[in-house]
Amino acid sequence: MWRAEFIGAWAVTLLGLFIIVFSLPLQYYTELGPGPGFLPLLLGIGILLGGVVEVVKVFAKRKSAGQAPFLAPRSKLGLQMLLLIVVSFLLLPVLGISVGLALCTGAAMKVIGKHKLVPCVLAALGSAIFIHYVFGQGLDIPLTKGLIGW
Image 1 (tube, rainbow, N blue to C red):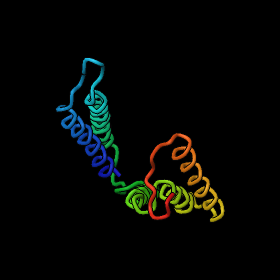
Image 2 (image 1 turned 180 degrees about the horizontal axis):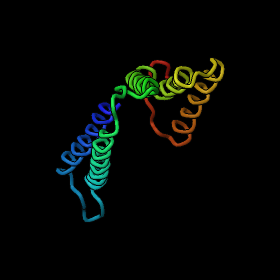
Image 3 (image 1 turned 45 degrees about the vertical axis):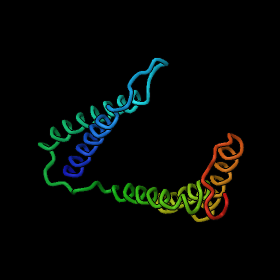
């Protein structure tokens, strides 16, 4: 477990540093107010500081950690969810936003939450209808349509 936390803490720290470096060329402040580099720089600093705090906590924890497993017992659920999100976002251009996110919702309920099939299907249908009508129709946000046209 210690190694996984160590890798994760350093990954967060490097992500913060990456965001800071790539936000520096953007204009921080304009004559009208905060520029396009304002939020990324502040977020990068916050993520970097959070990562550094985690690195320090992991090193302090190492002294008391003996031989622990690489991943926590419930890490498999987190990895399944991450895989589900990645697959869903890769399928969004084909399925469309409404259908793709609805399938992600239903699959997450079934695989991770271990719900029965009927509630998963109902939640997926409700999600698709909600996203399509509230965001696509009500707020007039252009959504990716996909093959189905939804």
